[in-house]
Length: 105
Image (cartoon, rainbow, N blue to C red):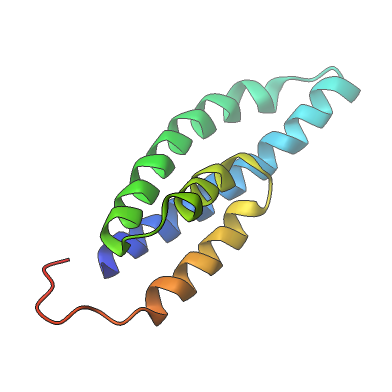
């Protein structure tokens, strides 16, 4: 579980930073007619968001989250700054959970 959480935390921060940069790029695209940032960061964010989905789903499965919480965590990578919040909430939740005795997870 520790490794899954570490992977999730890393990808959540990467996706969060890229989404903030992409948001700034989108503002520049429509205000300064400069789409350079969007052209560079957009595809990277899209690819890494897919990795975020996979790693979050893996952690959700291992931690046995309810579907509603899992969906909220998955969507957090689409709202600027929300992936940072989700990372903190998820980290606290996983670290506070007591491991099952004899669990192979």
